[in-house]
Image 1 (cartoon, rainbow, N blue to C red):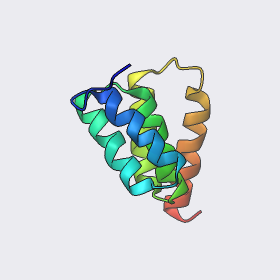
Image 2 (image 1 turned 90 degrees about the horizontal axis):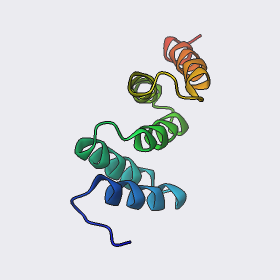
Image 3 (image 1 turned 90 degrees about the vertical axis):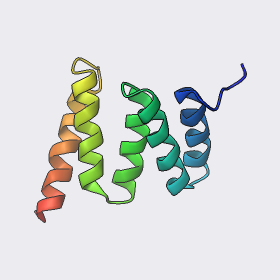
Length: 95
């Protein structure tokens, strides 16, 4: 399958490569572009959320996790995401 640079999937796939290589800055940029092109892109939100949490940017992780639940509230992983949100909010508060 040939990827089109104008497609969200192109940026998601390239972001995934950056993510796996530990190049989080470029991965975040590509996931963000994928989301700009397709605002309902759940996988891009999930992966970007994980990177933000790994980098201890809990505010951004919470925002992505909340958006993920808004997009797909019945997702099988939604309960885990909700627990993560509460944990990150506590970390933001310093508790």
